[in-house]
Length: 146
Image (cartoon, rainbow, N blue to C red; front, top):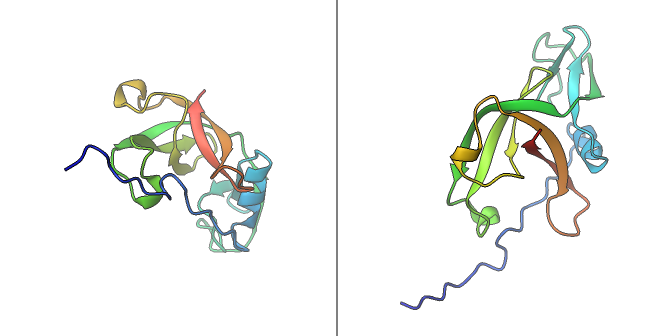
């Protein structure tokens, strides 16, 4: 067997999210570098992921609000072999972030080496937005050390 490995031409090309009426505000905010979350006006709490009703009251009394984009590491995993859209970029870290607003969000972390020694639980993070693929008009939230 040769040392040359055939590379997938789609390696690292991620499928772009398709905003729906439920998620449009989130993705429009991301294009502008804003982290937008649903806010329940009755419970006075944020929720994530977007839903048609409040997880606290079951009512539709929701609005979109920009949040701070600050949080801390709740947990993480280092992925060494990802699915097709992530081939060629491993290892990478999937992090669950406790946002200052009281919700959790999963994403990738950038700005550090992708090894567990460089990431600790409760480490402060801040959000950043990057194009999902070169030349894309879709931006996704990533996390970097604060």
